[in-house]
Length: 102
Image (cartoon, rainbow, N blue to C red):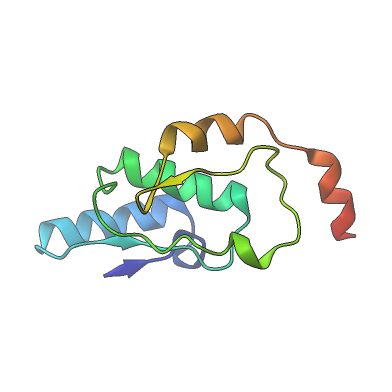
């Protein structure tokens, strides 16, 4: 079952869906909707927390953005997003880029 945390109602609602899937023997797969680096890094870290990091995830939307709030790019190695880099990237955001949205 594909679960998009931002569409599902956030991480708490997504967590409930993950637990339901696990209890029913269904493989839950996390996916992004149309997320910036912050959203993708958050979903990747959430997947690790829920012990889903070995499952495939649909997190490839960054190529559609001209810039991102994260100063450091997320690292993908052998088709896997490195969650250690995701955690570091979240701690180094450029909030001034938010002004570009207005």
